[in-house]
Image 1 (cartoon, rainbow, N blue to C red):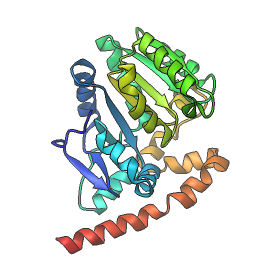
Image 2: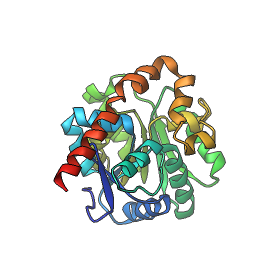
Image 3: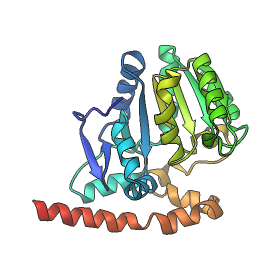
Length: 258
């Protein structure tokens, strides 16, 4: 499903971020699963925006998404720096939980795909406990490097076509998750797919989310760095630093064209 360009949005580092509240996103989710062709929601963060700038093909994938929402307070700050506005942060975990609540109310089903082995099953069990009546069509953990195996991808498409979930939650990480959804969603005939990052880990209880006060102040990255230094130090302390340079460059360039 192509992006609805009538939606209010902010372009940050070349990536469109839709300016919607959580309530407005859920309204669109309901319409998408009922009437629209297959669509993807992307929860974007600083790491992805920096990565997209280095991979022009990814920016096209983001442009083709039904919605791209800001998963990170720094994106709200960036919009303000550019004299623009984003209503609120919409994290992958919060969105996943809100969609599950909506699924209970409206009677549609979900499927969990990805994350480390066993985590999707635990997350599905936790969601069913938290949202009584939630229809979980299934969960699946693919082996490492599965995206390069035609047989494995065929198996996954057949499984999803058989289970027919309304919403597919994907936890494969960036950029693999967005790419896999783009390449396979239509063949699986799934109305809505959402790449939710590490959300399965949080929902399953394998990892603790930062306290709410840290989330609101844009410090969740620091919480994660403290708890996963080996995996995240390079991402947060090296890879994401160009974000500030590119943002300043965008602001200066915009000023020159005014």
